[in-house]
Length: 311
Length: 306
Image (cartoon, rainbow over all chains, first blue to last red; front, side):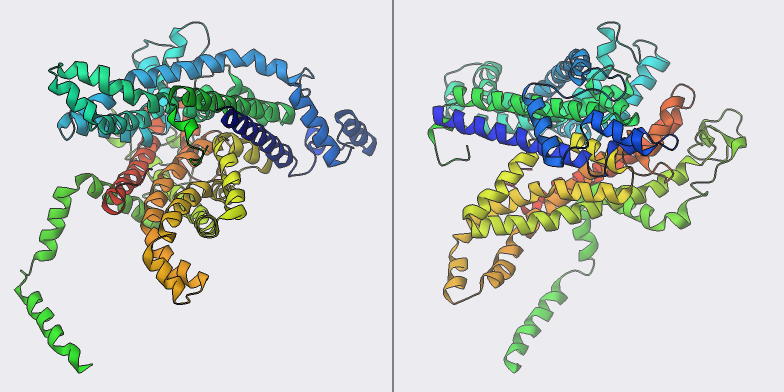
């Protein structure tokens, strides 16, 4: 077990390192941000040199990367080109909104996907199953930003039930959460269905049924409990793509989260904020995956025992 | 040569016995058995046709603006009955239907070419990784792990914000990041295939490694490649539309579905059609590829985990 944890931790560090490398160098692909920052008018050579020195861009690339990496370890992402304040403060300011949105999205997907998946599996081959499968297929075929626009059109513009944007209270969270949770619910319903089907073929289900336990008790207590494990793992592993999706959803609903911060920073050519925001989201995602993996191995001892399996 | 003739004659006789209309009948049987797969195929054919024939079937120039016909509602929803546009016009008076038809080109181009690139890279790396194993396998799979740990959309946002918009940039970025799925799938299959007796036999009679891979391994993994490729086309179309919607994808001057939805954002309250129809186009196309992919998987590779 300890060996597995150490291996897994090492892998996490490696991934974070690779992500930092990737982002650092891809942002510098097109040359220096200074020319972009001073693009208005004809900057003098002195002005360029001055700005470069201020931003530390006159140093060799590997030194810049080292400084960047050192900052990363201390959660110091540098200063915003625009506001001059520390990037981490900007991010922390918005982190709560993004977290609320992500949790809302997960809740929506669970509330929708688990009943749909269970019903689909239990009523396999019937109309219920057909509708369940159509639903999950639609879920992955919708562009989520379009769903967001349509929800605004229906519930905010026409029915005037819910606000289309803003951050005043829980009612603001409803439409964005549905938008974000919908895609995940499509995939999740598929997964719940297939893991339920797998579990329901096991002998202990037949045993429980033959003991005379009512159908639904068997389904919920015996089958679903065992199908829950892959479901929970999956939700954890999808957290990352949820954060990615949040970037778009925040844009549609003017939700003041990290995604919106990143997109605004892109439009203002504020590279440290883009860089910091993306790395922050990636690190969160990598660590959520780590926690899910480790807790999974605690719950299900089969994982840590086999050294041969891909750990 | 002559010894083959009797057999051919028998074959011919069997053909005569079969009813003449068997093609139509078997096609009908196929539809009844796989309605979802058929719908998927139909949607895919429809979108490919729209892309190939857009020049001829689009009723108007997709880029021709006309201030006098700004935000005209669809002809069937127009109370004044003056609208000449089946799906209405956008904020600068361009015909939505024509733009949607032309937009198919962008979506399918990104889907097909992006998948082609990732498929070629992924297949080669998967074959190499699975067949040769050892440190090469470790190395390739470690890179794959790292790529999987990083949400694509964030990566694309960073790269596109630096490089600027452009359809080729999107295609290349998608191709270079999504090879992992192909590589993992193929690696797994190659590892199990490698131990099969016929592969060992081919090796024993002195088949070169390149020949074994090409003649014996590749044909066996082709169906899985096809299934995953179809599903990735659907995903790529969605990703391109999302990026373009954010202003980080295809050039905004080119008619594309994501770009149309981005334009529509400011007019949702007054002109519902600008936001509705491009989204329906995306949904139907993506649904088509997903249905087709599902059907192909059930047909060729029911155990495949995609």
